[in-house]
Length: 394
Ligand SMILES: Cc1ncc(COP(=O)(O)O)c(C=O)c1O
Image 1 (cartoon, rainbow, N blue to C red):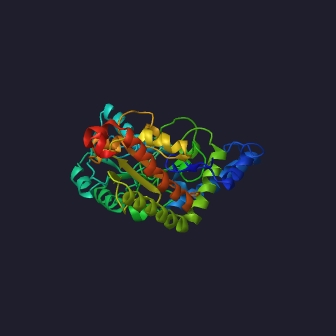
Image 2: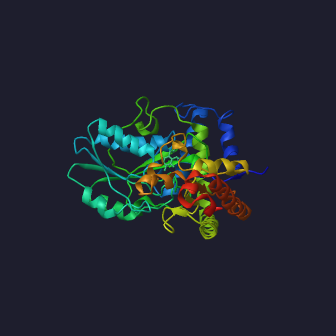
Image 3: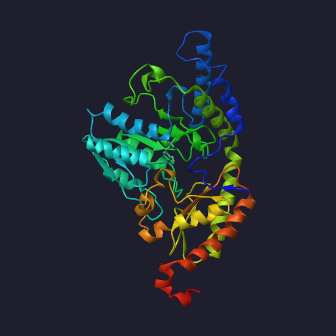
């Protein structure tokens, strides 16, 4: 059975060119970038070259890039690093309830350490109102952290406006761009961003590598103490193959972005429009237009998203109920809860995230399978029987 992968927001397959670029750094070119001999310098050159390529992705200077062990580490470093290095100036963080747990749980930890955290509300689409950020700023505010686009419902935040507000107030602005870097154009100067997180495995690079952009002059403490790697910002011998792969993936993503984003937007809209038209008691989660080109997230009344996933999987379609990181949890998604979606409806949600190898045929297959599966599940659902009466529904 041909499998249709529609979970690119969880992770992406590595491009063959990326694996190829990494290969020599596992074996022949295994040097440590800190070694002064030629083999060390060869590895250092490769890391420097990758740094230039990932910097181009967000229009920053290569020296402003710190390689990390992924998006989670970048988010942790941004929040903890800014708070700890600036605690003489204040103790207040502003964030949103739809952030990834890498930000939310880090903010909770900072609360345990005595920092204050304001979580501004979002509207029914998951959008932050920049004015609520403005109103939450106090003399003690150190950091605003708002993601570029949400990993579950795809809504794209008004980053430029939040950046302007933060800059005017003299507050650091961190953006988790894990779902957008390599997919949408990002210019950190234009958007007024001081810190930005990226993860390689969301843009067809390897897992376990990412980066934190830190604007020149930002006061930030390291998470890891040890050697002087990454300008003292991230101690430990560099993951050279991973960094080389990240660089290659960034280079390809930048070259492909102009064509890939409109192609995926077309497929996304075809999927959303077909499902909304063909089915009843279905809701689109997230903003209809200010939305990631590859994200479609639906809620279906009367049934569980998990059951839909199992039936889809049996037909070779790989989707998700939301964030891959919380899929082991039985709690409804914190993102859908923040949007004010009723618990039962939140439990009936499925996210389809498209990518490089998604074809028109794949979309057609989902549009054919999903209504059939939902109908079958609803026919078995005690909720349907309760609400509509068994006979009525049939
Ligand atoms: C928005 C967002 N932030 C952070 C992360 C964590 O990135 P990583 O898997 O590289 O730790 C993810 C991963 O799903 C994400 O979607």
